Length: 293
Image: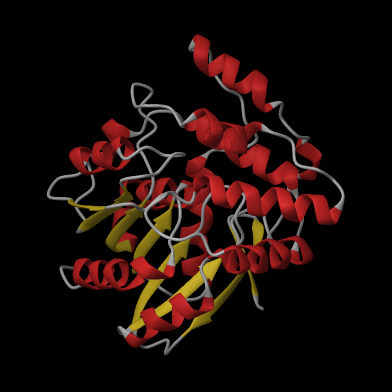
């Protein structure tokens, strides 16, 4: 896969489809590599007329790592958040948004449709208000505004964020599959074989916990972006699952409320996941939103 130099780092990326088609940048969430955007899903987007670009965020996968920064103590960070204290981080969502825009520049794309999931949705939102001239349309999936007044993750989902994973390979794979089951939601069957394939592929490609912790610190340090979201004018689609235990649906509702004329799609039974059963509905909605650009 190719690498691009952007925003003073190297970004691993790949593409699907015809470069002359509508560019669609996919941004993945916390600690997740670009392969979490499954190839089959990317190909279905190509069938809908998109030129799809997916990439590894900084500190994950095969993009630049920030080893020299050390790994933050997540429990201490959450204690600071609870006390309303300022969070220090190596970088913020602003930097990660600038990475994504830098990638577009490096591959000679002036404007693109932007779609992000979870933390990737936060990065996509940040691109839309920080670099509005680069955004044709915005899709924010199972994400939020950073508003501290919103409901917290359910306890079992919160544990997914802060519990240190095992270090031995087989135990870590089981841990990863268990966590995906916890956040999956109850409305659609959990495909353990599919989950296991992803966790195995992620481990073999790049097993790197420290980047997860620094990315989470970036989210916490960036804080509440709701006021900034009010400046977004790109056609916006907000997708959220009704059964999301990690990012409760109020996060999606808060996002749609902040952005003028945003369309809100709540998918009944979907958790913090994109099971194949919801792909037709999700991809059609992304395509319809892009047509408004």
